[in-house]
Amino acid sequence: MSFLKTIILILLSINTLSSGLFAATSTCSDIQTVMVCSQKRQDSIPTNVCVKNVTLNGYFHANPYSTIGSCSQFDIKKIKTYACNAGLRFIPRSSNVCIKKDQNNIFASSCGDSTNCVCSNDAGTEINTNYFNYSKANYDETVTPNFIQYTSDASMTKEYAVASGNTGSEILQDGSALKFHFGSEFYGAEYFVDICIKNSNAETAENSLKLNGRILFGNAIFKTTNYIVSSALSTNVETICATGTGQVGPVSQLGPGSFISGERRFSEITIPSAPLCVVRHYFKETNTKDLRENNYKKVTFQTFTDVTPSDSSQLNPRPTIFCNITYDGKNKAYICEQRTFNNNESFLETLFNQHYFGPNTYTGQCPAICKPF
Image (cartoon, rainbow, N blue to C red; front, side, top):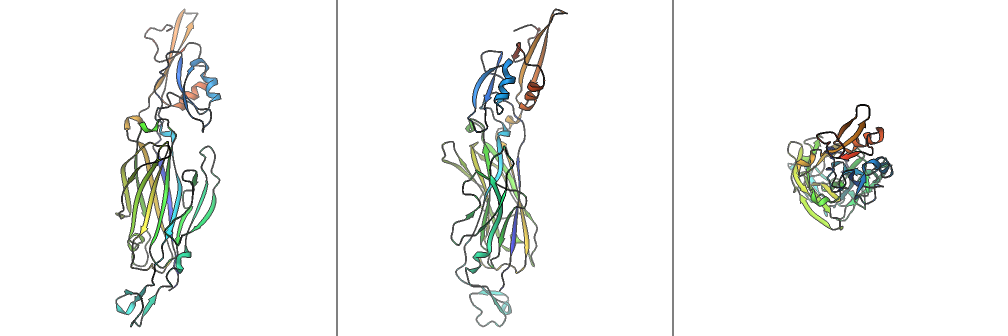
């Protein structure tokens, strides 16, 4: 029997709820200062400092990764999700399979008395026809990835051939760049795709995350039925998190299951807000009886992953308020101007583009009667 080929394309769609959270108002004792989560470089450790309001402009220019408020404040924008690994393995069968077409297409180890019989090739020889293509780059969210294409053959052992040997440090290209090729006449391929969740929030243990998603099958009909039915495809979603000490944290698992109406959903999976979590999407062909249909087909799966904080109240912006007081000599009166900033972007825009923060800028609301504090 001649070799055949099935191509599985994984289309990645990764979403993090983009709500710009802002830290609470200053806890500094001096009302002319404000709490700042100071970070000069992206890889430096953030620390809490009290900064004079009048010096904020220069401070944020010198420390561009800083934000207003305590470093412990949760910020969804500090959570990055990206495809970071993939793998394939194919364990060959120990015996051949023959189909007795003149005897109701029954399967046997040999043709025997059948006069119209087709057998597979020697067991194990098809292993070299199973491989996957991918493009990867070093993960650095500050630069555009420089993707390089690779090909990895499936292993003849129980170990997976993988795209990345250092989980989290590399990013895989999305779209149709990830392709699994199955040239084996047998079903039995097992493959996975990892989605990394990198969290740079300080004191992450205080804020667990909620994971929702689905795997959507793009219809691909063979001669008689579609791929997920003919291969008896099973899926599983497993989440593993690493703690700050480097230990493997709690494991959340959806459990093996089948597609329903072309998709598999998972929802309300709670994971710790650890520095790094990996969501592994497993696919396994469980049909151990039939041969693959002898024709070329392309199958598409699309993954959707949403990450939100378990505490929905954290999605409400927490404003930081400043009051700038000036004296109007002509009218001999004080003028109070209050500004409320709901996100770091609006704060920085005002800080860098307007002369608002002066020697009499106070943290908090303006007094009921406009006068110096």
